Image (tube, rainbow, N blue to C red; front, side):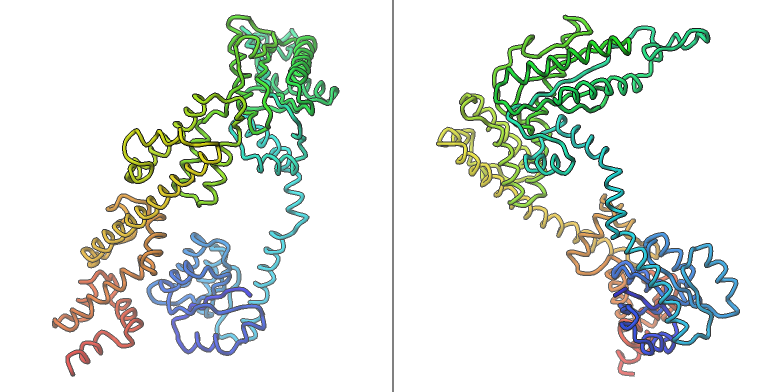
Length: 549
């Protein structure tokens, strides 16, 4: 059923359209009727109709002005214009506004139905196109290589949840099932004077001489892919300005995967030098036992490349040849920290549990020293305390008072107890932030209401002006105002103005047009219209009845 709004200032015409047509029979539901364009804009924002049927000639905001507003704010909404023969010039203007259909007055119910059915066909075609599985599948198929590369890049950029890695590796056809994993980085060596040969028109320009780094990188990728596929080992892709090799081994032997990786890297180096006349330096990282830890291995591989300054270019450098790399626990890196902080501030308790599980997922109790374990916990606690401080929450209510409370972590018998303790502390902090946020919302709304009550008589008062006064964005304010007040800013402002109008009508001798100006209405006719719509009588009628006349 498609939602439809009728906009027509003549009540008999509007009611006639609403009552004479069996809307449901033709797949439509009239969700609102409006008497003018201004009234319609609020209804459209609130109800998001599929179709708006509007007259051209209306007070306060005519049909073309309304159509222009709809095109700007709700471009997907279909617009049907009702116009008389003497307004045909307006209809020509409507074409420029991309009006979907227009009907000449006077018209019959059948004529309106015929036009609605044409619009319905268009709406159904748009929906069918969006839902067309073939179209979506084709789009996905074309996007798959890009999605696959983005996923591989994310593996070496940050720690991804294990469930996400498993799901996406299957979805993208990337084999990441194994016992051991390793990252390597292949970087094209800088060539002094590259690009100068292009100035000679008689000498052929080689890839080396072009100085085109992207072209060189792509050529290295081709060779690396060819060798990787020949050995059925590893996955190669471009990440930023490097070629990356991800090695996966079904064997639990760390020496086996490293030996094969270094062999592949050396073959790539020799082939690049032979066929491209370029040199590369490759850095191999540490071996890890989970694809979720490939980002650590990648960082080690990049650090291995730093040893070019000592060992020189055109080499394969394994980080464990140049640095001592004992088995280590999962690093509490910046991205992991951000994930925890975001969850505390905005997430659910279930999301919190998942994040904490991921935090501890990389720990190997058999390889982590007590000191390293305590440092890891302190890093997490520091993040929690930082969030508490920023939110204004009392830290003593979270983990106890004083530094001695941190000694609680020495009482844990196992990692499970530590996880539960962290979840409990974070849950208390989440509840505290939620209460503080609710209080902040209320304070903000109270300030807005106070400002509106003090400035409602200004005709140019707007949501933008209020937000400028409160130093917040209009989008944020609109959402919390509607949530807290159960009405929009425009509705509240109108309510305040009309209440003020009632008081002035009861207590003064001011005319309706004077009161309209006094309470911020630029158009006295629109004031009278709104007053009658709200209270069921005109300002004059209300004034007489309130005084017993």
